[in-house]
Amino acid sequence: MGEMTVPDEALYGASTQRAVLNFPISGHRLPPAFLRELGRVKAACAAANAALGLLPAEKARLIVEAAGEIAAGLHREHFPIDVFQTGSGTSTNMNVNEVIANRVSQLAGEPIGSRRPVHPNDDVNLGQSSNDIIPTALHVSVAVEMKERLRPALVHLASALNTKAEAFATIVKIGRTHLMDATPLTLGQEFSGYAMQVTKAVERTDRAVATLGELAVGGTAVGTGLNCHPAFAAAVCARLSAETGIPFREARNHFEAQAGRDDLVEVAGQLMAIGAGLTKIANDLRLLGSGPRSGLGEIRLPATQPGSSIMPGKVNPVMSEMLIQVCLYTQGLAQTVALSGRDGQFELNVTLPLMAHAMHEAVHCLANGTRVFADACVAGIEADEARCRELMERSLMLVTALNPFIGYDQSAAVAKEALATGRTLREVVLARGLMDAAALDQALEPRAMTKPGASVPGAGGG
Image 1 (cartoon, rainbow, N blue to C red):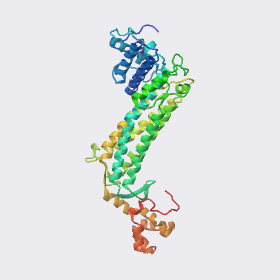
Image 2: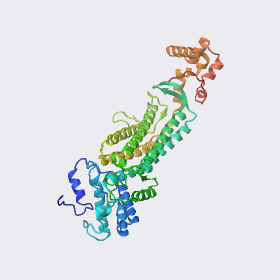
Image 3: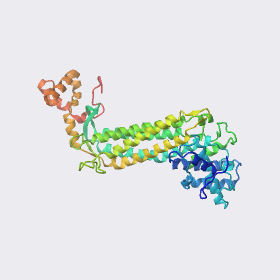
Image 4: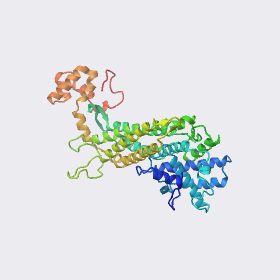
């Protein structure tokens, strides 16, 4: 396609420089985690080709060394191509091929650009196509980030919530459904629900990593495996599995693995669900801590910074607000992935760089936001036991416990009279002569209502 001027210090070559000139779009480069794993994939490919007798051992050794440097996060400045580029990621695949080839030239004492002792296409890209290698790196990189960054952050948050659930196990408070008073539970039980939501989020990351285990490597251009040794894909997957601890495997059908990105759309859905759960928890905690005098105030959130430029002493639930925004952003990125998953025509999806950007940005922000929320918010939460008791004792929904003794209609009438007159449930029941004092006190004991089996089966409702 003619001559192309490349900076003297660049490890990339003409293909990369042409893409830089073609796509001056956003200034966003592909995620570092994606590029690292693309380096790991290239090293695995070289090792597999050497083991199959397709690549001389010395060439393979040098490629593995250079690719290993990329996998270690080096040479990042030599990957200048914008996210918004060719939809197959061919520009980025050639970028890494050129960087590896030129770095090998440096290691071997040859001039950059000489294509000695290895060629970016013939050697570094041997048995590969952008159409199978970019999807492979996409699966590997997202799986590694979910396993090594997001999962531990979620485990950390679940542990923090479980710690609070145990600490608050004896604090009885009023429950709420439809934002209205409901029957009592303990603050510990409430926090145990949050902990389980996050525990299930951990399980979702495990399922996501398993889904990403199928790799497109070995399909080359359209899924037929043209110019690729039949044993190549299995050898690459084995090396990647050994290095990451993730059981990668060759795709069951290479045509599906390159034409569609349904697996990644599924994983985006898992991120969407995780974001929904974390948003619910963050919202609940800021509502439970609202006040300090005009809100619920059942818990005290740690103060992390001044909350107002005009109201002295104001402290806001900023960590909850941070996490909510992270989750909204994550869900938007997940929706981008879902829409991108539709945009494959025939044998190839052509939104791969955008999907890489969106998935890694989502996992990165969600992992960081979750860990900060656990440390700066959940770990410092304190219960206001007196406030919990006050609100619980004022609630009219304790009347629910009287259903087995005086029936639903009589209980409803008692609640309405108590609300209208400002009297307590106990006073109204005794005035109407519906129960004796001892039985009434036992029935209205809030702690007993929090225990499994305390209620009598009947017509439920929320």
